[in-house]
Image (cartoon, rainbow, N blue to C red; front, side):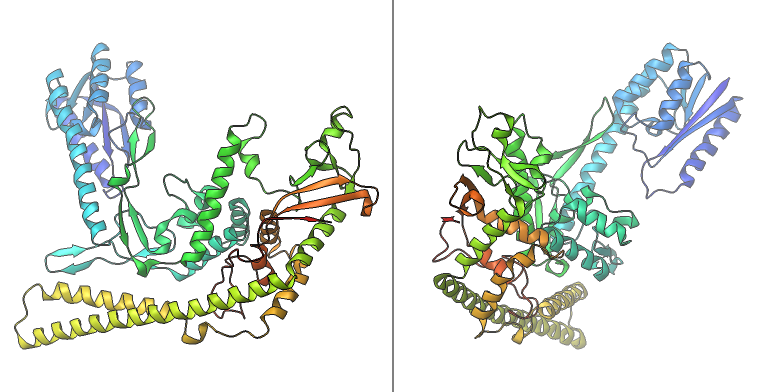
Amino acid sequence: MKCVIYARYSSDNQREASINDQLASCRAYAARLGWIVVDTYSDSEVTGRTAFRSEYQRLLGDAARHRFDVLLAESIDRISRRLADLADMYDTLSADGIKMHTVQTGEISDLHISMLGLVAQQFSKDLGHKTKRGQAGRIDQGKLAGGIAYGYRALPPIKTGKTTEAGDREIIEQEADVVRRIFTLYAAGHTPEVIVATLNSEGVPGPGGRLWRNTTIRGQGKRGTGILRNELYIGRLVWNRCRFIRLPKTGKRVAKINDPADIKTAEVPHLRIIDQDLWEIVQARLVAIGHKAKAHSKSDTIPDLNATHRPRYLLAHLLKCSCCGGNYIILGKDRYGCANHRRGTGMCTNGKTITRQKVEDRVLACLKHKLLEPDRVEAYVAEVQRQLASARKNAAKTQSQLAKRLADAKAAIKGMVDMVESGKAPKSILDRLIEREREQAQIEAEMAAQPADDGVITMMPNLAQVYARKVAELADALNDPEIKIEATELIRQLITKVEMIPDPDAPDGMRMDVHGVLAELLALAAGRSSKSKLPGLLGPGSQLSVVAGAGFEPATFRL
């Protein structure tokens, strides 16, 4: 009889030799029965819960062409761990007169299929349940139960008595710098596409040494995936956010979001890479872009992705015709004009055009003039001084709390050491001592990450002059490659619309009414953004957030 052998193993933790061992066992079985082995099929590192395996499918194709008389495997669970697939194969082979044998059981009957197939399927489910239960316990201990995120490495398991503790991670500083750079670039307005192109052009290796991809950075919102959404970077471990199921008809694994009650979190501050302010800026931008895409997805005229693309020009989509309410668009030769008038004079009679550069220059001049009004300068100075005082107070409080925790940990360690030296220590003292030493190391790392006492200053006598100089340089920010994108985004956020009003007495025959707010622009005038770092102002590593206050109400300015 012509015989074929099928072998499989499912996990990358198993040995490749497992396939050879299975084949050898089956060959010996076939030799005893006088069968001729005409072919072998093997699937490595593939689950038995799906029929969509390359060699498994080749086997079925050869069976349909009647190329063998017997299918042989080491055990029935090597063929499949899904009862439905196993029964389907048995029925298909039986209809073609092909028998099934396993080294473990011998010839397979329909009774074996129903009983052993059910056992194989249930074993797989039970194993998954037990694995997940063990992972949940590790999360409760602040251990990582999943894969290794970019920016971290796994620490060697620690043996304590008869048990081995694994799941600890440490930061890889070189990769952590890349993570910080990605967050900073995105917060500054760069898209994942631009960030990916930059990193790949510089030869910065991505996760696993592969090239960077947009999805690696952006991820998926509901599943919390991607560099920009990974909460481990702020010292928070999130587990069981989603589960994967396999679709029977296609064999594809599909992610399903779990109920919030099933999601576990644990604080792991020693693994923090991104500071909270930067994290919040990035999350706010992700949410804003997501909302923008959803809002436009209901429109038949604007594709979702186009709605989130960055405008090419500073005031694109913000200029409105006062006559018809339509958009002012680039008509040619870098001139803005009414889109409705271009479609036909019957829609709008406003045929007045103006160069893009003149519009932008006049709007920026208006903003700078309003920013330099005395009440706004005073409000800015007062807000900065308030935040400086608050930053110093918070820094002192944090250092005091960490110092107390460190003193408690050292006292506990000393007490345990004294107990060991006295010979009165219980057997569990070693585990407790190791845990306390880890706690001490973690606290010391947190203290080292805190800014020095002189990292926050309290007096800036020339702040008003610095502010005035930055406002005067506002237009230059739009030509600075390093901050052009961020400056453009911030200015656009301040302007609700610019109403274009034909007026023969106005410069260039056009009057413009600028509608919007000025609060956020104060931050750009002072530095780089409303949450960006201001070297030389707040000191190393410190940040400034300017909020709306007196004199920053929504307004309309005519120019």
